[in-house]
Length: 254
Image (cartoon, rainbow, N blue to C red; front, side, top):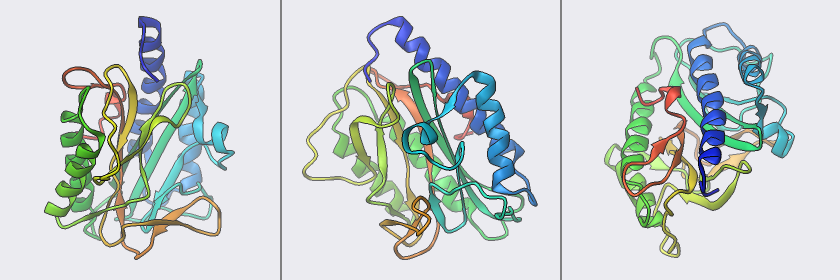
């Protein structure tokens, strides 16, 4: 969406606060021995407290309030009472919601407990790339140039990007134009970021794979060549200068 007045900005700020606070609290709550279903239900209570509704459930009928992916699961992991979190697991939580007709999206990857499997370097790379990316986005900037920045920053650090997942416009629904804000440069993408538009910018930084493929459960995605992936995501408003980070409260870049 494009922000045209104060009430729209306030609406976006409120839903963004709901998803950002929920993500932050879920990351803090996650612990060894807990199931991903426990973690999801904790997030559900927080979102409900804001009066917010799960965006993946509303939009796609997703079987959970939030997406929780563990280790080799890249994204869209289904919360399960069978999946128990272990020391050193790489976890990704993606929280998106609707509140009073406005929608926002955010996510973050983190390591639970001690980094016994050496995932922290990948997590840090994803955070650094998201921060650098957001700092380079403003009205008039070519979308493909931002994709190039993300891919080249990943390569510098010895990583790859997932080429069939990307950021997207958000605001009046979960996925809007501009869609497919990819982590690489598409030579056929001549679009530019527009001032006052709201977008969800997200990284998809991986160790081995360049394509995410869906498992038989119809939701969970893993890498075509295995390995691990880290994702970090903020909902932002594009301006003439530095973007307004609506989901700043999640503290994923801290």
